[in-house]
Length: 438
Image (cartoon, rainbow, N blue to C red; front, side):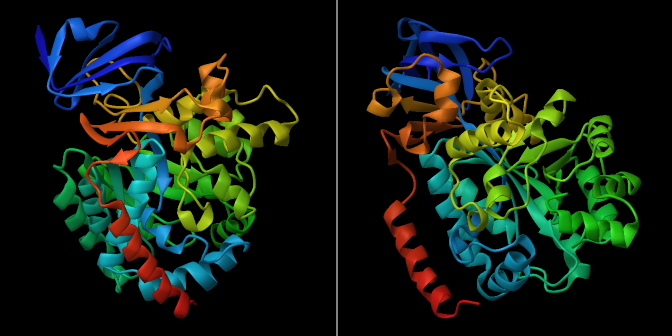
């Protein structure tokens, strides 16, 4: 008998490998942080100190939330039903200035981690202030993350002097570059909050350290008009001319693209993150995701922050992503369920530069696994797993979560986080924020 550290036994294994293999019933043997083997009857082959029983459950890769501002859980519902610029400039930016500090970013990110674990997300890509504290929260929660230090050209809570942005960013990168699960990145908010010099210097730093570079691009018509007014060209062309675009760029939103911009994204192998619920809530528009996929552009799925969504449930995001394109194009066949499931797993892994490690269940990859309870009335009967994942499942159907070989949640019970205490602290802070609401 061979030794394993964890056996997941008896479920229906949806691997999401290149063949979209399904093993039913199937088991997974895990050693340390790595998948050893996937197949039937592995309990006859491996001895393990820990067993995760998954009979009657779906076993699949953990979901990848490719764009989030995790600490903004603290602003959930604070400023709803507003346009993006009103929401940002008159509510969110002032609230961040007043209430965001290292302690609160850590707390808000921990709350986000709880929500994500309980809804099946095992990897996130964050972009915010006090990012080292956000990274600590993700590390302490046991999740995997690409944590991108936010950069703008005006004073913000963690960098009061914008000329100090890059120095602090490099300190952050060096602090986290050798971490196992939590990796650093850089995130310029947008081309309208970062001047060309800032964009270019930030990109050079990302290249120097071999880390991802994220940016909001073409989120609204207002943004497009502003970039054209300032620079005489559309946002994607502006970034291309600055030498920003390449295969390590995570372009978030990409709602208002023209055909030439889509061609540029394809040419430079830029990765795109789609956040449909945030785009809908802020009335930003509908991203041309089918056109991007047709061009072979990699697309991942992200929830955005809780202030503009207002939840971190990627199952709901998948459902919205598929239905939004169908109604917008009057075509029920567009953006099918299989494509959307891959956006939330393998697509997100590719966006983050982690495709060789996560996104599918295969021997040699990291052991990031979730199980979902199939024995529920709203899930009966099941004819097509992909359709069910997109149109029927929700985050509350997630039963157990494994990240890097560690069980973070078993039978809906978190094993490493003090859920009640964290929520109590958030409630206390919310009372303070509500009294002094901006």
